[in-house]
Image (cartoon, rainbow, N blue to C red; front, side, top):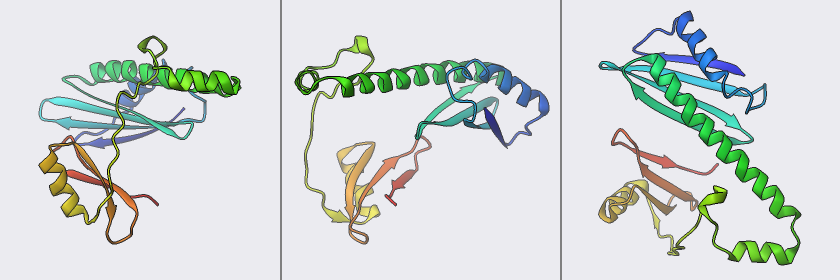
Length: 178
């Protein structure tokens, strides 16, 4: 794995780099050797915040932990990442198995509700609505009126489908397609 370190309000020393590489070696057997791992360490008041993100098969896996000590942060982050990677690889295996199945089996599997035992997601409800053209400001107002954490809308400027969302820090984000 290739590591990239970023420090905010803290200098990333060689000891911290060695600690990170030692702790993250636990997940190295689950990912390819050429995986890029970006580690951000932030000191917030008397807490340390560690964010680790990596790209795995065109999918970003990310974990963020806040703890009083950096060592505890890395322990927790590795646990979270390990669970996410194992879950994601299980989904890939299931998808490959379904692709090998006959069309009759595929229809049967698609109509059958998925159980929690397989680790798959279950869609309990489908909601359909018309996408109204609006700007991002109006979409944020609509999202706040509905008391949702995100809102999908069609941009009045580009006529593309966009998403506004509420970030953990209370600000808003906008996702635009390329």
